[in-house]
Image (cartoon, rainbow over all chains, first blue to last red; front, side, top):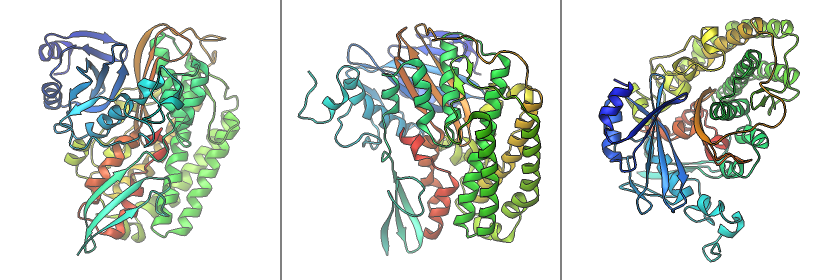
Length: 147
Length: 359
């Protein structure tokens, strides 16, 4: 139930790529809640999620799933810096969504508690994104806006 | 009467800073909330501003215990992006270090666990064993903690005289079998203090997505060494350890039995160490644009690295997911309904690494 044909049926509009480190699926407009439901039904475990800052201000989010030694990486993109939260469906997503919120400012709509997880109080949401363009010390306060 | 007790962020029961807020009704735990982030260093961000070679040294410092695993996983992700084939001898040396590091980590944890249950004599025995492992690591790498063995495409140092290491590991295995296994898995002290405490059912283990010894102690047969065999594990015939009960005793048992398996794997790798070069190339690596992940079984469970390159001198993105990041939240399920006095032991049974979690 985890071969490429099965995944192609689950993600009909996505591009699927078999690589050395697993199957990579990219879908620009992905219903992540339906995806999470389907991956859970197929028996996948959510290992983690990776946030990737995009030049247009949006964030690519990669969901890394594993089943019996078969990693599947599903990449999608935020719209207006927002994605639906999958935490109500997959408990293990809770901390990683909070981390991506801290680092990249992504709003995970429907997350039960999007409180800062790792972000120091003096840094603002999305400070990884700021720090990619300006020295880190400029992001240390809300009053010191990056130029 | 309901009351809330904060454990931490600085507390004698915690090895590293984090906060466990425990709400109790009488002596029974009703709810638990965990706060982390007290050791945040921004290592992922720093790695994106550091040259590829220096980043290996930086990422080895994610953790002071499983440092080799982090450098290994980072290198493996880069080697996937750049399609670098690591020589067989280097693969085996990486494997040997991984297993010695697992022994060092499990013994350190066993020492802490025995101290928590008041088993001071065993604490000394286990600490002495750990010291022996650290001596071996120092004799191989020149370092006791951050070994600096990894480089992109291979390893920095060779293991030239394998015989004495095998002899010492065999002797340690005998001590583990003679003293540690009966004391931690069969003695009345261990049974009374740990059996039935802090149980995590298999269903809860799946729900919380826990990994490593925590999952295996709840009957979930998952280990990257067998699920996604890497380094030399498929050639060495790795045998997974699981336990059915899911309690603190089961977590102890998994780690103690894994000590014996680590000794076997390290000895086997030392005896079968192939000849050949230590690295795929000399000089600076050229990392082309691309992205890749690497999965490794650290002492505490699955580690994942995502690495992206834009063809430049530094990584474009490094993301590190450590096992403690997914194991610590499950404390909520393990402590609910337990006695307040057991919370310190239950959290210790997770072997939480905050240096890893916070990065």
